[in-house]
Amino acid sequence: MTKIGIIGIGRLGLCFALNLERVGFHVYGIDSNADYVQSIQDRTFSSNEPHVNYVLGEAENLTVSTDLKTIRDASIELIFLCVPTPSNVDGTFDHSYIDEVCSQLLTLGNPEKETHLVINSTVMPGYCDQLNERMQPHGYTVSYNPEFIAQGSIMADQQSPDQVLIGEANKEAGDRIESVYRAFCQGNPRYSRMSRVEAEITKLAVNCFLTTKIAFANSIGDLTIEHGGNQDAVLQAIGADARIGYNFLRYGFGYGGPCLPRDNRAMRMAAQKVGLNLPLSEATDEANMLHRDFQRETFEQNYSNEETITFSDLSYKRNSDIIEESQRLALAVDLAQKGYNVVLNDRAAVLDQIRAIYQDLFSYEVKEDE
Image (cartoon, helix red, strand yellow):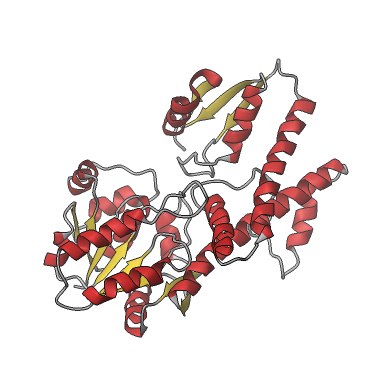
């Protein structure tokens, strides 16, 4: 049975671990949160992500620990890093969690056989090359393998990707990574193998294209509404052009969540670092904000602030409990601060997060989980 290590078994890492375990790998998962690791070990952990709770309950070859030495003792030669890379104030990514993990690995001494480190976390272009220079003298290679998934469908998205993106350290590392995905991916995804920096740019560029498409759709929708037309009819006609397509070309709230906004900002910073200007990224963010202004002004024109307005599904997307940069929530905040009586209707897990931040700015109604 092939052994694989995963350092960082949070929301994404645990899904990846379970997808690997269910097709026959023995997965060794490492996380720094002792209580969380214990809950996985005794199967008391509960996730809002579909399929996680069932697959975890059935998992027989998942070993979890807080001790990195567990991976070394198991002589694992392929290790995926799924640790956070939060955004800095300037929009770049903070790589300190990856750096710290690698420092801890180095304290264990050099591995007996060359070991391949695979970075799943989103990073700035050029980072993996720098990390490889640091780790290679000590028996490690560094490759880059980000995933394109959405919260609320992580396990399914991992199983059925459009492509598997591999920024490989060398052919052997790339072959090993590809073989892992071929073992559990359904369908026939494209395997895009390239250099590390090419893969780093590709990851950002894909998400930036999506933000641009979402912002474009909402902007055209706003224009159509102002001319008295039907925005959905216009967008359906635009999407009928095969060069454009329907995906992400729907009218609604702006883009948000933990990935798209920050990847868009990071792309701009990556360009600035090498002396380039990418006005598209900045324009996309501006268009996203202008769309929210349009939505707020439309509410103000059609509803007096004596009326009660109810918002449902406040997370950044359906089937998620994440409120980070939720444009629906941001609009609700705008209107409540304008004096409207705003009622939020959502699951308790979502409302508890909002109440902790905004307290009595809203009225709250709990709905049953769907």
